[in-house]
Image (cartoon, rainbow, N blue to C red; front, side, top):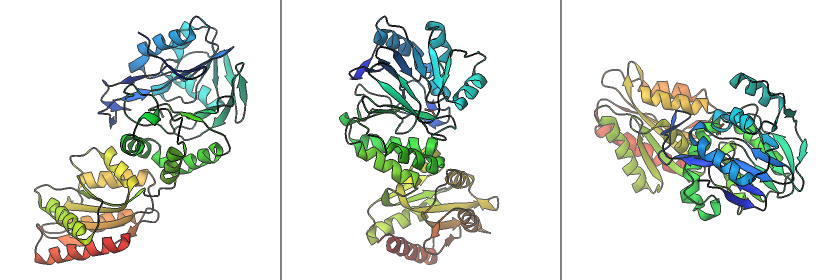
Length: 399
Ligand code: FEO
């Protein structure tokens, strides 16, 4: 059965959610599923904005048919060529053979790479071009690297709706309410939106800034992303958050301790430091065993927190491989401007600390806070005192 929702007068939500897929891009865990959004404008001419992931295509086609209500489909606008949105292009063409495909030159290059098909019925658009549907006029705005080079957004000048592609998206299936106004922004939207942003788009902060600059010239009443809920109120909240993310500004004055541990001794050091910091007056402290928690959640915490502590055993004359993996993720996502503190452990030749410091020295505006604390096998009286000093230094860096 179709499951469509009316967003405003002529714009329908025709996407769908999955709770069956366990990973997004076959990488990121999605315990709460994900939605693949698609929108249909039913005007004198009809326009479908993006298709969907293969996993929800049956629902998607039922939805289009219901929303079209017997009308022809005139245009298929491709804002993004990643297969979680474009997988059904050929099936749409087969079902609606007269449909015109709308995209930019890069869109069509990728389309021909993904699909062995001619795509003769095409309209190639560039920055600022418009498409009139009757009452509605869509304006196309290029958004390269948010999140792929061909990405663009479509702005409906009539309803002031921004079809924002991957921007303002989030993990999580839509549980009935398709509007963000029905969710608790801070508790329900932000955590998974931050994990989505940091892992998917996080590397491309300058591209997101360029898009925000273009969006600031538009009057926007509704934001329709390709994943997650639609914004019709308080648009300044997700926009402000995106600005912080794009500029790699931590959103919270908080400490996150990432530790690796084989037999519990480095974990003990991390726990002791957390306890000392709490007594020193730091309220927001989180600890993660990097061997247990998926790195996508860890990267999300990196985007949130002002202070990052890394505690690593020495392993094969280097840092622990899971800590190394996390630091590499931080570097590859271009994170900058964080306060870093280091704890190393080693039973005969502790070197993990220097290896971590060396890696952070290659990143932008990473400030070392406190002295590196060295533990030989387990925390003793001397290293406990050094942890106390580190706790004070972290506290002082936050006030
Ligand atoms: Fe949701 Fe970049 O695709």
